Length: 223
Image 1 (spheres, rainbow, N blue to C red):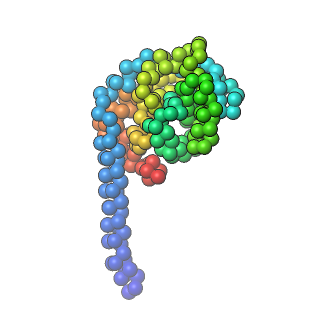
Image 2 (cartoon, rainbow, N blue to C red):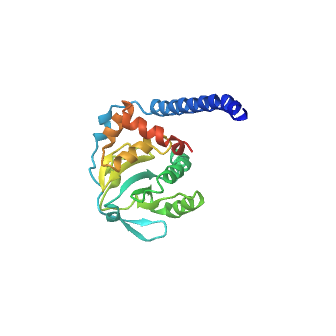
Image 3 (cartoon, rainbow, N blue to C red):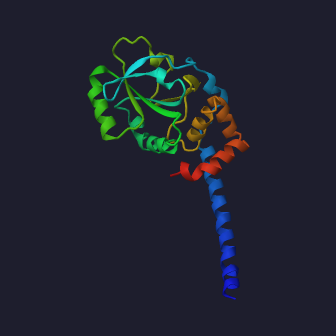
């Protein structure tokens, strides 16, 4: 008798809670899509760079990093500078984004600080104090460079994000770490060599693949 009473009281409640959870999740996914920038999908194809050049840049511990090491990776690049409030505001979101992809060793986060040479120590202090994760690189803006990254990637605003796969540009104007759902989907698609314009179109058109990805992973994305 007690078992029957338990079922009668709690089973409907469990069903109701499950229904509410699914509805709430759907609302979050919908909100993530609605908050995306309203742009034509081909805007991500309008780019100068098609690949990241092989080059050597200085890391936070004063060693030299060769971009050839990224030849088999999917890379999320953050171009920033030390006195950029929007850049610094993205740091907590970047940490969560990196935590989400932590189990995928093929996804790499590359932070390239664009600064004058005399700001190098300031850069090192900010990286240390704010515990900026990923590969931290310094690009000297006020000294001659063999490769002009600013011109190559058409960097006029900061922060600027770029997604690569096997050194090939998947798209410029990539979503920022704070654009939950959109940025996760974009990086995931890039691992499959899908251009940013295509992944954007799939998400804005609410394709089954995009909806399934967000629904299945939203609990981790929204941490």
